[in-house]
Length: 289
Image 1 (cartoon, rainbow, N blue to C red):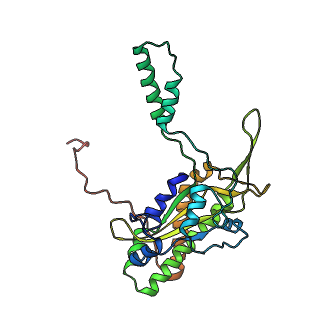
Image 2 (image 1 turned 45 degrees about the horizontal axis):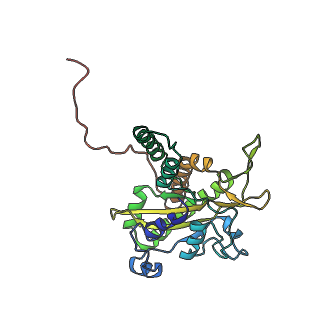
Image 3 (image 1 turned 90 degrees about the vertical axis):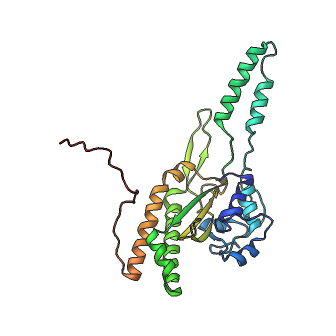
């Protein structure tokens, strides 16, 4: 998730239940009208904000998102957390800067060739954006969502509790085994070490259905890229490599924990099924006559 106005994507859709909320609509009113529960804080890293007033489970406020994910600042005090998010030139600005440096002695045709080359190179590179966070989505298997959708209120509550417990276990695993930062300088024969962090700070948003309107119990967990280093207490960025590499493992761990909890609670069983790919056409019989 990009820094700056990237957090507005959250406010428009994820925070508002995958809808398309106008940013002029207060979230409090949206929650009342749509029935979408407000987001809440996750992770032991939230204790590092302010003077420790913020705790996991506390509701997330819109201005807190703007500070942390929009500006890289403490969501309570507004203090800058480590280095400010870097700002990058747009593609158009990079092109204009390089074109301005072209040799004035080029002929018209030579200049056209060079401008075309610069435009192609910069367009291929795309727009650079600072990373403000990572958006993970933990979605219950469809059979669980269907069970939740047709169950009575008491059973629904137990299913949601199992889902929340599975998400919490995955976040705890991510804090123990995945989340880390890097310290040191890679340039000029320096060295970079991967070091531990004081937990992660994340915001979670529960949604009850898919964009098609069918039951789909899932939770978006948005993890801030700002983490406090245990080594020296400085605020740094998460090492992105293990965060990306662990996506499948974290997803499978969520599925396994959820299945185990539901089996223990309801005594239900599980079986693996191949996804249905629709009717298959037979082009020919390769076995011969």
